[in-house]
Image 1 (tube, one colour):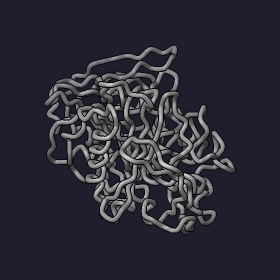
Image 2 (tube, helix red, strand yellow):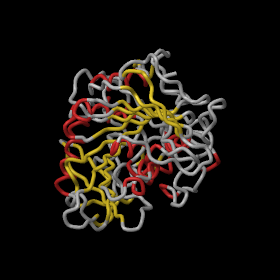
Image 3 (cartoon, helix red, strand yellow):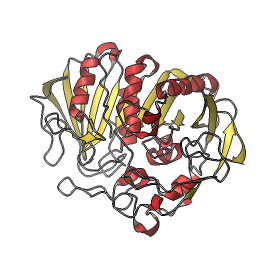
Length: 432
């Protein structure tokens, strides 16, 4: 996926809509963690003036953003954060040294612009006003990669009993988002339970996921190398982090990066999940790795159906979501029938019989735009769905509702798009 459409779009492009009336980009915020003070200290539930950065006035274009936010450094991975200091931000790379309080030219409006309030107070890697469950703590780790200063946010239980083996989740933000923003959107601690949650910061708020788009791609940043280093630092430096339980999740541009990691270094990861994302660079050969693909029916940046018209983004032609799923079923050597489950507003296809116990799952929400889908009555949110599929290959129980979920097994062979079972009317079927 080319870009995260800013915080407003990522947490809910307006309210989630019914399939027959898709919500246009530019509405108010949908369900997020309203129990927490919002990232960057803005008011909960709406942007200043009532408009988000998509479809309304471009908040980031109103003037210059003064970037001199307080941040903190840390010692070894997962160690306690050090004293706060004023951090100058270089507009090319927020982690390079710069003059404290340096001004950055106003951003030209883009569909994925980040509001100025978030840009000023939440540069990637800065210590943000996170709201974590009791018993959890956070820290920021910085280290040099060549001539760049890179960083990542770690969220973990404050106390880890001796002998514990905790899963590691590397969560990759979308373009123009930050680690703290994606932490807030995904709200992983209550979903994963005790785990080491890692939120790396992309160069220029982007990832070089190959093929197109963003500052990291234009600069040729080795993000595969950077993220591999992050994983090694975490599993060697954070108490309880289990090298055999390392998962990657990514949203939008971060989802593209997750695909690239699965292709380039599959042996490092126990599974990857890409939300609202398709790769541009084709993965021709890789070792089997569990893959979860999540897409919303009304994402304007994606084409779902395999026989649909592909989107062209920045002169790059994207594959359709279903063709990506088929590719991974082939790469993982899946051979058995696909199980189709309808749960509230989502349809999930799960292919089994893959090599080395790999699994490929495709989840399509029948509503929503370019966003990380929140939970709704009868429909689990993207965080719970992704985590359950990565860990056990099953869907999580739906939130309370009067409408029960149904399960049906298709006669379609994994890797084919014909003969699949159709979903309940009103859903965007994964194979309709």
